[in-house]
Image (cartoon, rainbow, N blue to C red; front, side, top):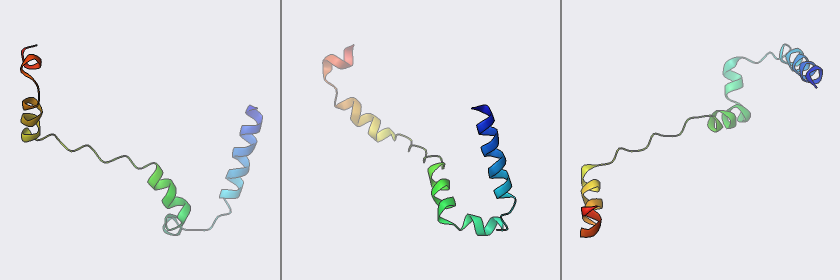
Length: 67
């Protein structure tokens, strides 16, 4: 199996060496854009506001507050 993986990588390298596209041309392709979106990190979560924190604590019952 390792030989097969090596052969596949060699084949891809040989095909890749014949590509004459520039990096700019490659980045404009749909395939690149799909891959770039797939591996893009997610947006960070928004920080909690103090008002939201106060509202959560006011929703608790007196019994839950004393625990």
